[in-house]
View 1 (cartoon, rainbow, N blue to C red):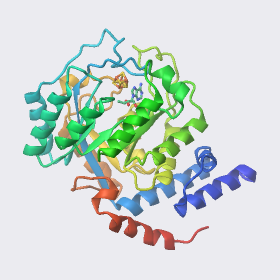
View 2 (cartoon, protein in one colour; view 1 turned 180 degrees about the vertical axis):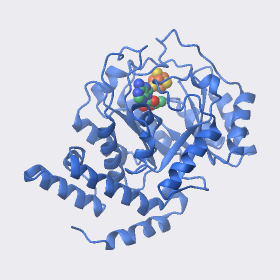
View 3 (cartoon, helix red, strand yellow; view 1 turned 135 degrees about the vertical axis):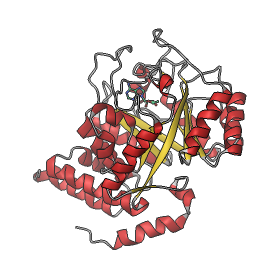
View 4 (cartoon, rainbow, N blue to C red; view 1 turned 60 degrees about the vertical axis):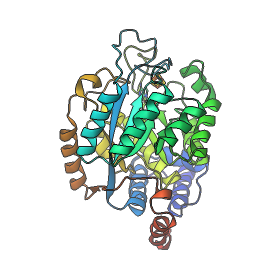
Length: 372
Ligand code: 5AD
Ligand code: SF4
């Protein structure tokens, strides 16, 4: 355990987190610097906080990667338009409908429709697909299709979409601009606000270990997500991809990313926090470990296997060839081992799931617990 000023700051930050007082940048820095026993204490409190809000339920979502076309050229991503060696695909409406049916038949209560920024997949086409899914299947629909016009976002909501993931990627505006040529953080945040205004349950999120990223900016990532009222926070390590300009950079560190996840659980107590696939790319059983450090959601890949290889944002071997049934079995076993079970509901944002009741239930035992 670190004594002295740093140790005291850590203990103070942890005590504040336990009271669910809003954490400052300095508190978050103290948490992110935790080592050894302190890191264990951080993970334990994040796990307790997860349990206070979600009990033993973990939400399993099914993700469908329906197009790998992208007009953007993000320096970190394998789908960037500059990657001319990638063979591109786009599912048509019938195929996407069929994959959705199969996922719903497996019991998924949320389907996440994800793609690159593909202008050929117009707002009208996507809205039609969303309403087709919502009419036929008993599922919540999450979209992860990037930056679009406000009119598109409105049309998707009108068609029945429930949630939207638009990761802010990094709270550092200079780094953002460098890594996403032609795009700005302020535009991205404006779009997050639109999504909130339109009534979406909204997800933000960031990568850990980007070249040039500072610890301070990671603390600010968490503050930013609190400020935009994120219902979901997608946080994962950066993984260098061989066909991108960042191929020779170091990737994000697994142990550190776990600390960021735990700090996110404390900074945003009721948020849906996925154990991201990227965690499995950097460490065997990475997602399993993340579920013990504050994460409460897992997204399983239900994209047909022959497409999945081509949806290579970053290299990940772990889940590439596994059929959805096998992934489900694996995670059912992981959950059983951890004394948890798969949620049977839609797994909506907590503020919508049961309103204040759930929050009140989560808070009361919490606030009566002793504060060291
Ligand atoms: N490593 C980790 N995550 C990445 N993403 C894109 N490229 C990488 C990479 N090389 C994430 C971004 C994006 C999401 C679709 O995938 O956060 O929002
Ligand atoms: Fe396209 Fe998203 Fe990849 Fe950027 S991160 S290149 S927007 S798929």
